[in-house]
Amino acid sequence: MFLRPAARAALVTVLAWALPAHAGDRLTLDDAFARVARTHPDLRLFGPRSDVLLAELEQASLRPAMRADLELENAPGSGALHGFDGAELTLSLAGVFERGGKLDARRTLAQRRIDALAGEREAQRLDLLAETARRYLAMAAADARIALAGEDVAQRQRTVAAARKRLQAGASPESVLLTAQAALARAELDQARAAQDRDAARQHLAALWGERAPAFEVAAADLLDLPALEPPRRLAALLDATPELQQFADAQRIAEARLQLARSAARPDLDWRLGVRRLQDGGDTGLVAGLSLPLGGARHAQPEIRMAEAGLAGLEVEREARGAALYSTLVQAHGRYTGARLEAQRLGAEVLPRLERAAEAAARAYRAGAASYLEWAQLQSEHTAARQRRLEAALEARLALIELQRLTGQAFVAAADAPARGPTP
Image 1 (cartoon, rainbow, N blue to C red):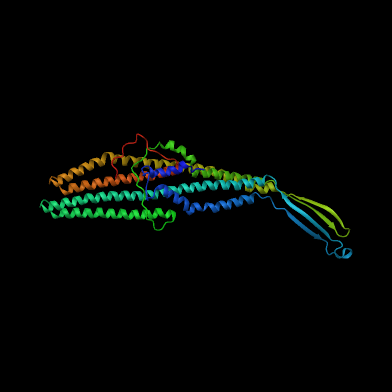
Image 2 (cartoon, one colour):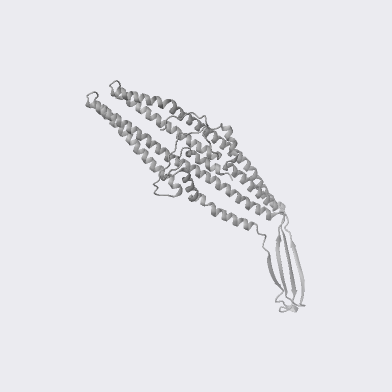
C-alpha cells in the first residue's frame, strides 16, 4: 500500500547521498534496512496474524451447518399401544436459511480485516526503517565526532610542542606547557569518549536484527549534505498518504462492514426442517416439514446497529484529530530542519573559515613571540567548538529530515542552488 519503493528510498536517502558506490565490508544503510526487514520480530509477527485472519475468512465464508435429526416417539407405549406398536420414527434434515445478506457481510468484514493488516504492516515497517536510520545516524555521528576529536588532539599536540620549545628557549614559563598538556589530555579524553559512544551506537543498531557481538563499521556519509525542502504547506499535501492516516481509512472500511453485518441481523434467519416419519402401528410413512421464524429480530438488532454507527462516526473525528497532530508534527520538524540547516551552512561558510585563519595567525604570532598562549588556545577552542556546533546542527537537521520522510514517505533531493556547505568536519 503506502510503502512503495520510493518510500523506502526516502529513508535510504537520509544518509545515502554521499555513500561511496562500493562500501566494501562496511555496513551501508541499505544493508541495515535489509537486515531489519528480514529479522525483526515486529514484522515477522504479521505472518501468524495473517494466517489467523485467513482462517477467520474461511470460517466466515461457511454457511450454517445442516443437521440430521432422528426422533423416536411413543416407544415403548402403554395400554393399547404396548411395546413399539405405537412408535413413531422421524428422520429429518434441518438447516438455517440466512436472510439479509449475512454471509456476504461476514465475508466482507473478514476481508477488510485482512486488507487492514497489510496497512498495519507497512506502517510498522516504515517506523522500523525510521528507527534504523536514526540509529545508523547515531553511529555515523560518533565517527564524525571521533574525526573532530582526532584533529583537535593533533592541534593540541602541536600546541604542546610549541610551548615546550618556548619553555626550553626561556621565552615562557612552565605553567604554559602544563596548561597545554592539560588541554591535550582533555582532547584525548573527548576522543576516547567518542570512541566509546561509537561502540554503544553500534550495539544499539545491531540490536535491531538481534546481533549481540557486532564488529561492523558504517559506510562514510557526508552529514552536511542537507537538501533544500519545499514549504510546509506543500509537504502537508503528502500527509494523506501517510500510513497513520491510511489506517483510519482501513478502520473506516472495517467499521462499515461491521455496520452492514449489524443491519443484516435485523432480518431474522429462517429455520427449516424436512423429513420422513414412519408410523410403526400401520407401517405408514409420511412427509414432515416445518419452518421457524424468530420474532422481534429488528428490535433486538437496534442496539448493535447504533453501536456500529457511533463507532463509524467516531473514526472520522479521530482521523481529523490525528491529521491535525500530524500536520503540527510536520511543521515542527520542518522548522527544526530549516533552522538547523541554516546554522550548519552559515557556520561552514562564514564562521569557520574566519576562525581557522585567526587560529593560524595566532599560531604564527605565538611562535614569533607576538601573542600569548592564552590568545592562541582560546582561538583553538573557539574553532573546535564551532566545528562541533556545526556537526550538532547537521545532526539535528538529519533527525528532523528522518521524521519528515517518515511522515510523508517521500525522498527529498538537494536543490541545485543550495548554498555551499563549507569545509567538511
